[in-house]
Image (cartoon, rainbow, N blue to C red; front, top):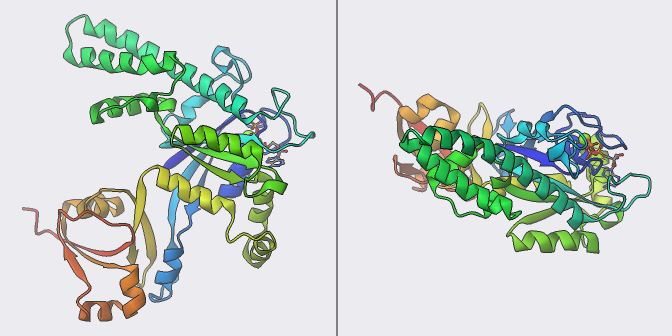
Length: 366
Ligand SMILES: Nc1ncnc2c1ncn2[C@@H]1O[C@H](COP(=O)(O)OP(=O)(O)OP(=O)(O)O)[C@@H](O)[C@H]1O
Ligand SMILES: [Mg+2]
């Protein structure tokens, strides 16, 4: 899974990216500090891994991961070449979702490209520029499709129809995700890499004094997100980067002194995961305990394929139990003796938190 960070210049995108990924990208107090994209990986924290590790001994515990891409800032007029333009958006055409970083902190020393802190104005600027970038993409794809459609090519005709459908909201200043698309249409939209078709998580970069984001600057972002059924995660980039640098016991101490249980970035990673409609199952044994991220609704063979393609093809059965079973019975042997180890077949729809051993072999093959 992959997410891309967007926002105005100098709002804290790279600061948050660094705190998330510990990748050490340049974050600096001037606009357009980022030119080339930064790519990093963040663990998706899951407390259940620790619970499992309490009963199954291994040296390796591997959480699910999220890839994060941090790009340059976008300014008003980017589509006509202002600032660094908008070509760099190509780096986030492939991502699964967007993290939209919005400046909600007031600090005279940190320049705002439009001269004032205005979260809603900022969001609108970014949304407009993203819509204009998508219009460009849709426009040229539509030209191509219409050209080939003239010869009567059915596929091109259908393609042109979908593209026209996408063009309408964009012209009205609305994102493509506001459309109700069927699976085929979604596939085309995805292959075009339309940015406004992707889900968005707003990241309110808050003041140190408003860590929980209860202030008015975050409230307006919450109201706005609520209208589109979206989510806002308040993160103080400045504090989070300090926390990330500490690590270990010092980090725990600082969190405690702030009255927090975990870094806000842990919440952010989890919310991104939720937004994408993913959940996890676990594999657990002496070699490793590992979380695997899969879309909600995947079957057992598909889930096995997440580990290795061959495992999907040669899938026979899945032995499944839950974290609760493990807590109650303490060992896999006891779970089995208590009749709690389920044998599931090809049709089984995976549940969040299943602990699984896949049985695979050549039985299904010639
Ligand atoms: N919550 C915050 N409170 C105060 N200062 C912050 C906060 N978050 C980030 N900053 C500061 O804002 C400045 C800009 O940060 P950063 O370089 O991360 O922005 P950016 O969005 O990546 O900018 P660019 O688009 O130029 O790459 C830095 O000096 C950083 O320390
Ligand atoms: Mg940056």
